[in-house]
Image 1 (cartoon, rainbow over the protein chains, first blue to last red):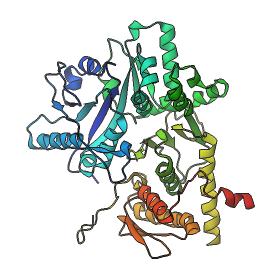
Image 2: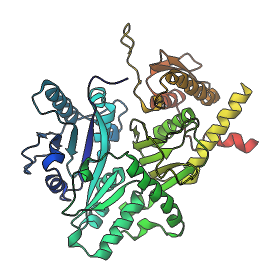
Image 3: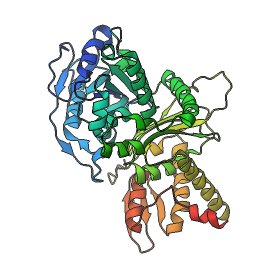
Image 4: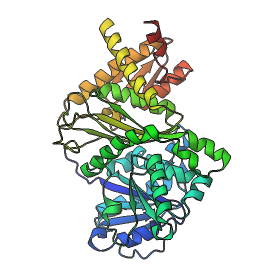
Amino acid sequence: MSLAYDVIPVTIVTGFLGSGKSTLLADVLKGDAARDTAVLVNEFGEVGLDHLLIGELDAQTVLLDNGCVCCAIRGELKDALATLFSRRARGEVPAFSRVVLETTGLATPAPIVATLLGDSVVSSHYSVGAIVTVVDAVNAGQQRARHAQWLAQVTAADRIVVSKVDLVSQAALAGLERSLAELNPAASIARRTCTDDAALVLDSASNLHDFAEFVRRTGSARTDATHAANPLARLNATPAHRDELAALKAFCIEFDEPLDWPVFTLWLTMLLNRHGDNILRVKGILALAGATQPVVIHAVHHLVYPILHLDAWPGDGKHEAHRSRLVFIAQGFEGDALADSYRRLCRHLQTAEAIA
Amino acid sequence: MCGMCGLLGGGRHWSNSVAPGETAGARRQRYVQVAHANRVLAAFRLKLADFHGQSFVLSSPTGAQIIVEDFMQIWKAAETMLGRPLDPLTLFADEEEHI
């Protein structure tokens, strides 16, 4: 079934105050690449993006009835996106084919994702393209120690762009990139250079190339993790905040057996319903029983993006067995306990089915 | 949406997705999910039924019923009915210890 209207991908550009989000957009969104891009800025924006559309958003938040802060629908964002779409449909603005949303430095991405996925008007017309987080190489340590938003922004990212790389030493930069990779193994990390092009911002997070990278990263992360001591211990965080950071863990669980999709949906909805507050991010590629195409899954807290099917397995031709991989960034979990709970549910359902 | 009653459901929820080209399987998958969910909920004497392929009806042994849109809300509603959490990390763990 084809839709009579377009579904427009939204790239969310986030990053702490002063990390260089606007600079990134001003540098990268130029010329042809930016021609059919609409930019929404979640604060007063005066960057020279004259040829683009800049909407200004005022803060106004509507809570969903489940009352969870991370699932709050942001009313102003909803209105802005809906208005933008109607103006496009009426021909009042050029027919843009994607939207870039620049958040304020203090915003956590979850409510924005919630707005895009949870509101029925917005979710019919827009999809989440990617979350790009700009990390300030100079101030990262301090921001991580003092501001919880920094962590939320980094863990939600599909792509992390490290800015101000010329202002810090190579060793510090390598250290920062290592700790970013440990915090969020699901994201690819790039350094800002003057030759960056629009693909850095606009590429979708769920293409085959990204997932080939993802599989490679998570494959190697598993071997690294065994001999790395707690990577978060070396952060110079304040004591209270350090406890929180130490409990935060990124891990990858793997399933050799193909997953049963109906069982998996039950398990994941149950898990996110109970523990969504502590699960900052889930990203994975799944091999399903009875399907040849891999399934891509993304979640931020309780919110799961619409499921995507890739055309082929990343790195196909190497004749490896297809295994499901799920990266979790969560507080207070053990990877084994999660995998066990899924298998236990499978066994319970099989026994119950046999008895019935 | 059902045109007669204007019933809105969680049709677009991610747990309803099926593989591309398998549109006929959506309803079937829904019934499989409901059957599985009932195997979980039976231990708590709750029952789940599909409602017009759009929503679900969760009912308790005391006759309480609630219409829920998608699986995330089913577990939430079940927890409210039971007055205790349904945690997949501990669910059925004791059952396997006895074996």
